[in-house]
Image 1 (cartoon, rainbow, N blue to C red):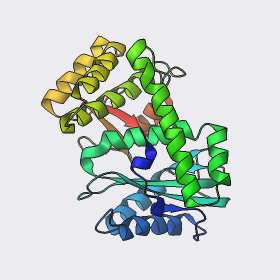
Image 2 (cartoon, rainbow, N blue to C red):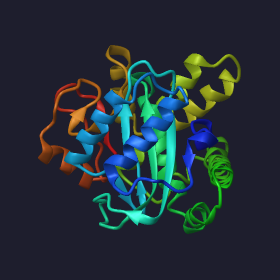
Image 3 (cartoon, rainbow, N blue to C red):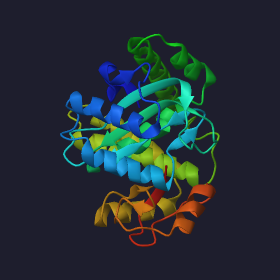
Image 4 (cartoon, rainbow, N blue to C red):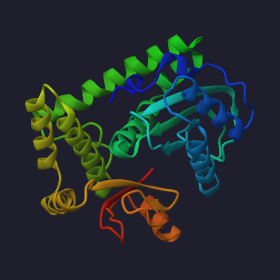
Length: 276
């Protein structure tokens, strides 16, 4: 996924004015509002602040990915803020956050959101890319780094799908989490296929390749879910399944988060779930 498809240069803040989490979130949301990516920042801010109280979206290594599902948006949009000196975000590694990727997306783009977050996490795990962003002198330079690294990662990820039954996006991951990544990618391609005006043959080929990588048992359940009540794979946000919108026991969500060896389903709607 090319991150810059969803990030305007004018939605990148090279040095944020805010000095605390709440104000930083407001600053980035207002930026998306000013650029007409949403009709009102209020509902999104309420969602994001409520989630931050439950659990920080600081994913470690100086990165935070606050997010909200916003009805009425035309597509996923992201605002990026940089804090050179760092900001206390109660991140999982307890280290200051230097980059905030604030993501808002419509309800029908859950898979796009999952892939966007996965791409952010993958790209910025590269110390070189992260250092380039932190050393960039303007929003133009930050945008260029994100674009270049996104294209490089996309090309390296897609090539194996054409040649062999391996995928560098999951070569370091095993078990259920690897299959979740593949399901998320397949679901995204299926969304692309439904809206594509050209290139449908290539998209179908990618879907077929991914189906070969996932175990038959998982594929059968995925197909049943897609036929009965799509989407088959949904995120869990704030302990709430985004498929049936039922609140899940916090202990169960924590177990899902800490158990990458197995694939998990929502106990209420049976959809595959993924905790970001």
